[in-house]
Length: 245
Image (cartoon, rainbow, N blue to C red; front, top):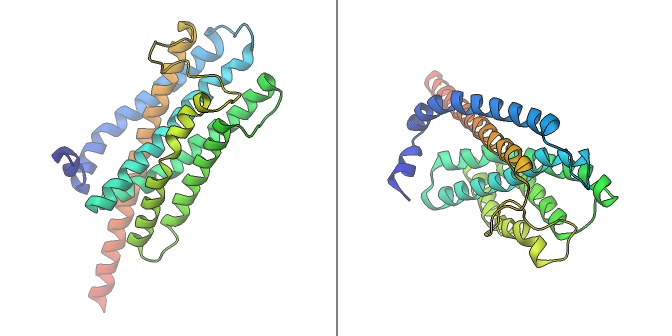
């Protein structure tokens, strides 16, 4: 593990770094998401086939990207916790799970709303939709396992193992449209031969995606800082109880 990442495993160093990053990530998230929403709802033209229903894309697609990205972060932190026993990595994985579950829920709900006028139905059991639903349950499973044991470390290990094993679902989500016959169209942004989506839509979509990423960073930092503070208070209470006895 690189020395820089090892250094971030120190709660004191993390607190100092997060204190500097958090105001900027929050400002970036608010500015980009606000700009992206106005841009996509007012200035981007309607699709020639889907009409104004395509505007759901500017929330659905970034939310789906973030659902996968949050899980990748959670899995990476879980690997760090299992191998190097960094407590901060366990805290980061636990903090990432509810955020990722929320992004996944948004992706599923907006996908259903977009699917009704486009496909004529809110839901079909195709590979992409089913694998994203599995991702949502993996998040719920991680949260459940994290709090299922009286021993916090045992819960962290069980949840970390689930997160690492569940990471196999990420390439299934990504390549499901190429591997199986699904209603979803192939990738139109992240392609070897370049994006196929029109630039008038692409830039608004990228602004929203970066805004969602900054929003995730802000929420993650807030949740980690809150958990560190809660654990510090818990440790002080134990010391006070031991001293009084």
